[in-house]
Image (cartoon, rainbow, N blue to C red; front, top):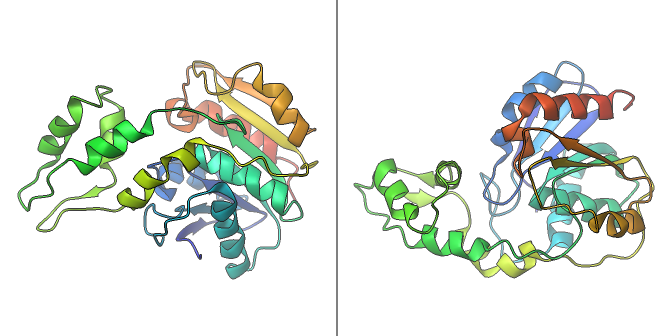
Amino acid sequence: MILNAIQAGEGPPVVFLHGLFGAARNFGGIQRALAPNYRVIAMDMRNHGDSPHAADMRYPALASDVRETLQALGVEKAAIIGHSMGGKAAMAMALQWPAIVGRLLVSDIAPVIYQHGNTVFTTAMRAIPLTPDLTRRQAGTALAETVPDQTLRPFLLQNLQFGAQPRWRVGLDEIAAAVPDLEGWIDLPGTYSGPSLFVTGANSTYVLPEHRQIIRARFPTARFVAIKNAGHWVHADNPTGFLSVVEAFLHDWI
């Protein structure tokens, strides 16, 4: 599958992969900041944004999408940066095709099985009646009972296109069916020995101390950095801090 990709700048290729219910444009500010020195490629993962839809959302398949898209763009090797779902796809790519991954940055996720409760979100989103007169306020109210987080509701609703024929931009049915795969992890063989950085939000509990041994078993060069004033959505909670870490990680990327 060839993914929709937003590109900016010239130089060594740097790829950004977003998390579940995100989109390539979520990295817009960071992409613009890096574009003077790098060719920055932000991708819509399958079933997200303007990329095609498909039922299989296991991480080897998501990683294969990124690989095929890079081949289509003429990129032989890139620094890969992935958040959450995108971080798992980035890890799967590094383990399967290490020669393509010049360096790896994983944001706030570990190669383990989680139980995030995303089925609650997909159920609430699918329950919104997509009537022609639907407003953003009405959609937000419909989500409020099951999604009380006031910052999460607008994030989810960025995927809803309003108008005469409201529709979800994401493949909501495909995502709902694939939640176990998205919260899971396929234990791929091999290791990735290239430079690896695992970034966490200081206020997040997604990557626990006991996960470090699991990470280092597959990524033996892994280093760990916690960004203060940030939860799971590190790049959104503290964009300045996240950008500083990314720039330091990329400073000798050629």
